[in-house]
Length: 140
Image 1 (cartoon, rainbow, N blue to C red):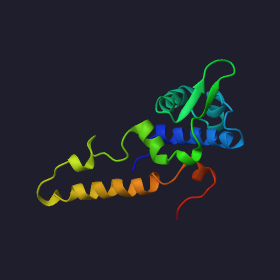
Image 2 (image 1 turned 135 degrees about the horizontal axis):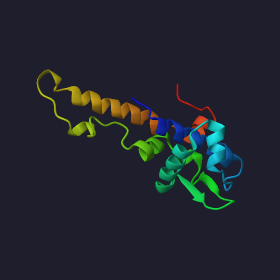
Image 3 (image 1 turned 120 degrees about the vertical axis):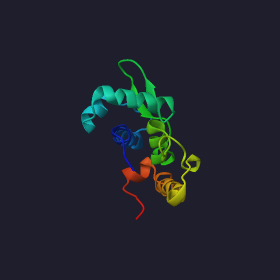
Image 4 (image 1 turned 90 degrees about the vertical axis):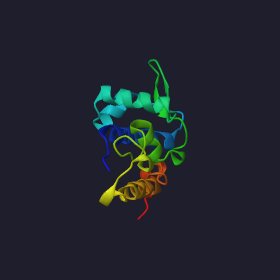
């Protein structure tokens, strides 16, 4: 599995917001603060935060007193939610769902491998939340 820079930066930004949310859920954090804390390029981060806002993971407010915050409890946001919001489906084969690819001859069972890979990724990513990562409560 390839973790894109967008997904990595998005997770890091969301974990910054998680730490603030756990103190006071309504507190807004400026993108610049997140960028500096996590050493994320500011322009790239703005695009990531825009995508996360469009998918409802974060909320934002404009203006001098504005910023970003989680739109729901970090216990309700899974890693899979974040990856899908930023990069699309968890597992694709040349842009297609694993069930939709066709192979012939000695490769005919490769489709089942890709389906199993997606299932394994879902099993991990759909069960770990931002709150789990922040509290270091990860599965073995």
